[in-house]
Image 1 (cartoon, rainbow, N blue to C red):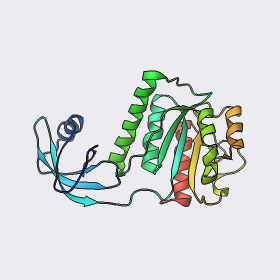
Image 2: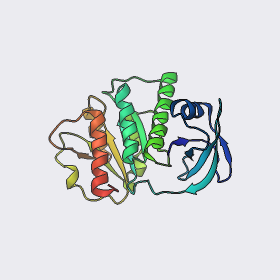
Image 3: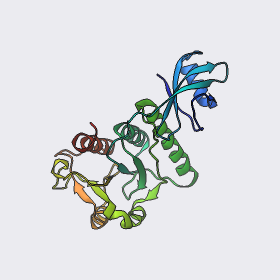
Image 4: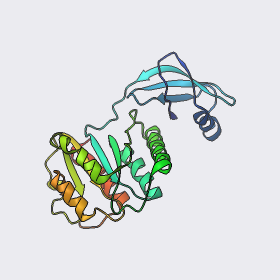
Length: 243
């Protein structure tokens, strides 16, 4: 059944007019017709089933059923991702949402190739949030993982010091001695730190370790930035989560 995110109050019995872009996609790209089943969600954890009620240049959905399926992971993983270029960052965000990550914090690091500021940074951030919404539409999640404002890594790290005791923090490092399978099961929320294309600068790595982050390797091979975070999330889900 096609799923669409709709940033409106939803309730059984309501006729919800779809946003213009959503209607265009439903009718033009998916070729949905009146009476066909559709699911809407607004990010509050609930989804609503209904039928397409009208067509033309606009479209609406008559909501007939409320459902609250459990699709959120028992692991609360916040991915702290060093900015990577173009499609790599998009891929990381899209697939991390499919794998169940709870939140995403993009950070600018010393070795980040991408330089973003001002309007360009805001446009990219809105694009990433759109990628996350589309991933939720595809994978069935009814909560939208927030994507935080882009921050400089060292500045972000200083802000986390008061929360260090409440979270397990892991830094992906191919030179670490500890593997993921060597870690005990977490008893709280998880911060997963992944570097950009060039990895962590030694100063950044040292500061993160001093702040309580544990260095963790993912096997003997060096992984690309878009592979490392996704492999780690999948492994955590397999060992501790809902895989």
